[in-house]
Each structure stands twice: as structure tokens, then as C-alpha cells.
Amino acid sequence: MMSPVTRSRTVLAVLLGALLALLATAPAGAKPVPVKPLAKVEIGRAAVGTAPNGLAAILVPVRYPIQLAGRVVEVRVALLRPGGKAIRSWVLHERLNGGRIRWPDRRRGFTFVHRLGLNAALTRRVRRQPRIRVTAIGRLDLDEDGRAELRSSDRATQTATLGPRRETLCSSIPHLRVRPGQRVSVPLPVCDRQMDWHVPFPPSARVKEGRLIYSAPKRLRGRFDFQLSSETFQYVQVTVGAAPGVVVRALGDSVTAGFGFYDDGSSMTIGHLLECRPGTKEFDDACSSNSLNRVSKEEKVEYAVDYGLSNNVSWPAQWANEHGVTNYKNFAISGSEPSDWAPGGEFHATTEQIEAEDPDYVLMTMGANPLLSEMLFGVDNMGCAVEADVLGGYRECVEAAFAEVHLRENLASLYTDLVQNTGATIFLMQYHLSVPSTALAYSATQIAMMGKLLNREIASVAAAVNPKRLQVVTPPHFNVGIDISPVFPSRYSCSVLGFKVDGPSVQSEPTQDELELLHPLSFCDGSESFEPPWVIGGDTGIHPSAAGYTQMASQVPAP
Image (cartoon, rainbow, N blue to C red; front, top):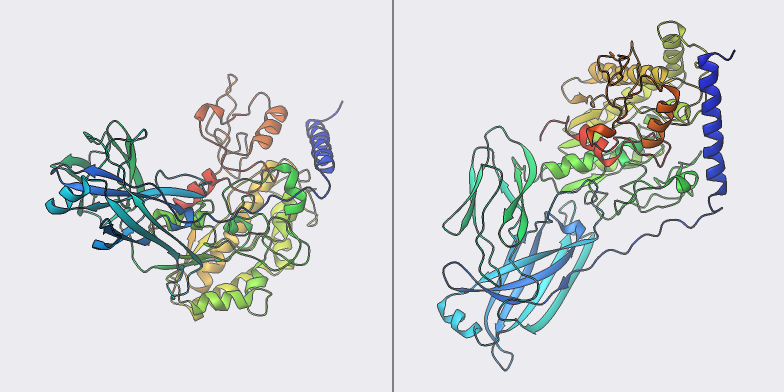
């Protein structure tokens, strides 16, 4: 009779065979996912609205590239005489509200409606088909050095419409920034028709005398949005505790880069896995959220124009967005190792660039490659899989493998270099737990133990180099849905037979399907929690999803 372990391995081998067949039948040299051109600044049709005080306001809708969300733009408006000469001119500077927060954000652009309030004399004038000239200027200057990474502008002369339009047009509330315990008050939106605004939630926001008033709780830090409602609605976006001028840089491997997502926030599919997998010699960061490269050709890295900040995928991007950081660059490269970034390594020039830019914070996940990545793809280069007992020789075997690739020495070299050459606080994110559907050589418990030992090494080296500057961040436990004790306690059950597991699974959908097949009596899937998986399926279940990265980012202290 076949043993349970042999039966499991046989089932897994069949499943891997099906996966390899799927990859083999994917279009050879399948067309890479095309890079979408960046959106441009586009001025829409202006209208005239009436403020609560009875005075007119010109409403100018402008569509902006998504990369400009949360940034300050300039709009110039001139009210014209019949012959084209300006009666009055204005220059507006507003921080753009990009609308409801998304994980990830797949939009190419968004519309912000600028409001220009008029006095009584000009109100009388615009009641007669006002002619205006608008110039909208969008600049993305990531490191505020005066050299814009993205420039786009539009200019239009038009007659603003009077009266209600088919679709309601209301001015947008700018992205608000407020310190904890303080209050901010802004005018309510002006529309092309009368509105009665109210705030359903939260209790810290209220409408009074034509204004929206928000009082920030004293202990709150971070960004959130809430709905301002009437016949229509819009999302108000607030960042509490924003630290203006904070400089953030990130480096590391695929977990920092957001592998499995493209720069536009879309997900890599299983059919593109082979062409996206990092090369064996050179790494070009293909198929990562901070990169424009869509196929791994072992060429030069071409970073996204905002290094993946606007797509809100990776944990560094989500942390930066959460706290209103705009001076941000994510230089992480999928497949890279600590030795690549340390002195003498292939990417040490980039490390030096980061150090020269004088960051306040450096964020990274680093140390898994090459051993863990090979194991997760089903390779047993370490020769440890034969040790079935995680309490026996398996631990010693893994530790010996770490020593063989000089893990401690390479991490210490990189950490020391950053500590000596920057004044930054350095957040070291440890690794999440993922159980890929292709990890044939190892059990889920062995994979969990491997990750635990790796995270222990990261913490140990950080403590030895500089425990104050090197702050280790531990991600939440990514439930597997089966018993992986003694690595993690099994105290949860969704089985009628009472089998205990670590919790409802948040692993990838392919992995959950396999676990349910292999553990039919005890497996606890995550579908009942109505929560998306924390791990993507496009790479067979290795890297975090945007939801998983959200969990990781939530553990990083506020700046």
C-alpha cells in the first residue's frame, strides 16, 4: 500500500506535470505584455457652479496621469473679454486627490475638478456665457532636484457651460494633510446644481456652514478616505501625520520589487511565468511593479517613471503612500542577492546612488536568494529535503546551506555599508510564508521552518551590526490552512472532525486547491473569510499579492 507521503508526492508530481504542460503549451515566445504609454494632462469642458454664498465659481475638470496623484500641480485660469483680452487671471496650486484608495491601482489617470471662486462683480459677468483660457501643468519631480521625470501640460480656450449638465460636475476636495490631534476645514464642493452634502462616516468628519471639517484623532497615523455624499458623492482623501520632505529609498529582491505585477498594476499570468523568471546571470527586474521590463532578457533595468509608487503594489510603495511620502524610489531588482548590493557587487553603484541621495528611510527585503528561491521552484540544491523531521537534521542542514553561500557575511557587509554611509533608519522586512504549488522537494512544514531560520538570520545580523538603525520588521503569519507545527501553533479548526490548523488559508488559489486535495479532512480554506489571497497564483504561489503586501506594510512604523 502507498504511504501518505508517497501518495502526496505522486499527486504533486501529477499536478506539476500539468503545470509544466500548461507552460509548454503557452505560446512559445508569447507576446510580452505591452507597456502602456503614460497618460497625458487633458483639460475637459469647464462649467459654472454656484457656491453656498450665492457667488459663482468656475469648475475646470482636468484629467491627470495617475503618477501625479497626491502631488501639487499648477493651473492658470484667465477670464476673457469678447475680444480675447484677459479681465482677470489666477494661478491655482492644489494637491491632487486621486480618489478612492486601491490595492493595486490599475488606473492610467484620474480627473480632478479645480474650483475658481469669483466675487460679486465677476459673478454677474459670468452669467453671460463666460469665455476662459486654461493652462494645466503637471510635473513629476521625484527627488525634488528640479529635473522632472514626467512633464505634461494642456492649454484650452473655451466657453464654460451654464446650468446643470447631463452628468453632475462638482469641484474636487484636494488631498488633505493634517497633524494628529489637529483640525482642517475646507469649503464644500461646488457643483453645477444645488447639493446637500453630508458625511455618513467617520464621526471625526462633519459638515457645517458650507465647510467640511475633519478632526484627526491624536493617535492616528496614515492615509485613508471617506465618502462625502449628496445626490452624487466623492471620496475625501486625508493623510494624518504626513512628514513633508521625507526621502525614502528601497532596495532588495523580488519581494521588495513586487514581482508578479507590472508597472501599471496589472498581474502577471501563469502563461508569462517562464519569460518573467529572473535570469541565471544578469537581472533586469522584469515583471516587477517598479520596472518597465516585461520579459527577462538579462538586459539593463528600466525603472518605471515613479518606481512603482502610483500602482500601490509593493510593501514599500504602500507604506510610502500610506504616509504621504512623495520623494520615493524603489531600486529593488527581482532575483538579486545581498552580495549584489554590497561593496564589490553588481549593483553596488546603485547602493552608492541611494546613499548619495541622503534618504531618511531605506526599506528592503533581502537574503532569500539564491537558496530559498531555488527551493520554492522545486529544486533541492541544498540536499535537505530528505530530512523529513524539522526537529532533527533538517535545521542543521539548512544552516549549513546558509553558511555555504556566506549569508551572514553578505548581509553584514550590506548592512554595514548602509549604516556607515547614510543617516537613515533602515527597515528590514523579514520574509512572508508562502507554500508554492511547485515546491515538490519540500513539505509545507519544511518551507515554514526554512523561512523561520532565514528570518532569524536577518534579525541576528541586524542586531550584531546596529540594532538601533537597523529595525527588523516581522510580517504577519500567512496562514497555510494545515498543521505546520512545531513551526507555528495549530489552534484553529474548521473541520467537523476537530483537526487543528494554523488558520484559514491565505495562500494562493493554486496552492489552496492542492492543499485541499492533499488534506481533505483538515484543510481550512480562506474563502469563507471573504478576504483575497495574500499570495499571487501567477508564479505558482510564491510572492505576495497586493493584499499580502498591505499586511506587510501595516507592520512598518510610521515615519
